[in-house]
Image (cartoon, rainbow, N blue to C red; front, side, top):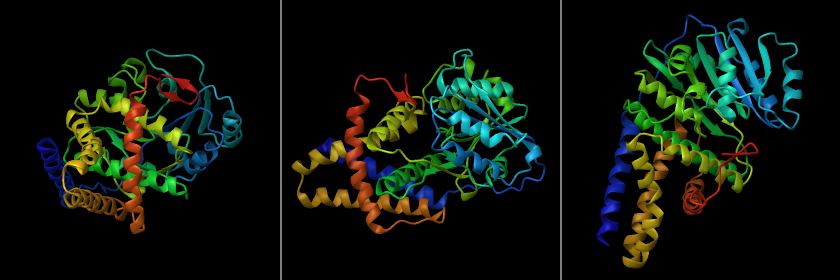
Length: 363
């Protein structure tokens, strides 16, 4: 009983502090980029026939001079029409190149191998990374560049999911809740991670760590390169605004969601200790709360559940409002139920002795 009480005191103290920091300690990077550098946009694609055209159309609509950028798309042995669609789209676009990826360089595998080979072909001093199922906003390049200074090696944008299904909307809230937590730490100059679907790296920082081919392989290659760059003394910035808000295709079903989250959880062990501790603290909430229902009075247990729901809903509301978005009140309640179910299933799924599946491959 005392262990549960101690846990809840710690949980709500931490959650309350995070909410206050979100409210009152916010950094923004709104500097105007006047000198537009040449940039390389790198996209890894494997079996993305349903998403690749939307991705490339968004790139083509960027508010950035076409002569100031090159777009390199690596087709990672797709077995569908991905490469055919790419080549048809870029045939009248001289700054776009599709590279078929066959061999392996260094220690890189999978997506990391594709990006390593694209980086070797890139000509710019600035690398911008996105995924084949992502649609970036027209303001993306300029807004990401606004986060740079001479000490920064990594700039991270903001990504959420599209879709009109209730399942898609719950995923969207989940993404923004997690990124909001990450932003609180980032605004305190405490690094957490980056997102490979919305990331800028300087060539100098990238080459100093040896590229993806010379760092230990990880299924979450973005976290791996982020950590290596920070170890070399480079700074980072995480941006949270509509100008860098990219849209991702949602997980189509619950099985795909579990695979995605298992992959992310594998990468979470490489996060800083304070973020890993927060992850454990948050994940333990339901395993602690449910037994507590049978030990404490119903009123106390329900009060704890309601306070958590209120704090979480306020946090989510702020995250949405900063992007000029909103959600009906009942979505916040459904989100709590979504977290309850997903937490337990994901804990069990994570410890199953199965490999992580990614684009038809196992790691």
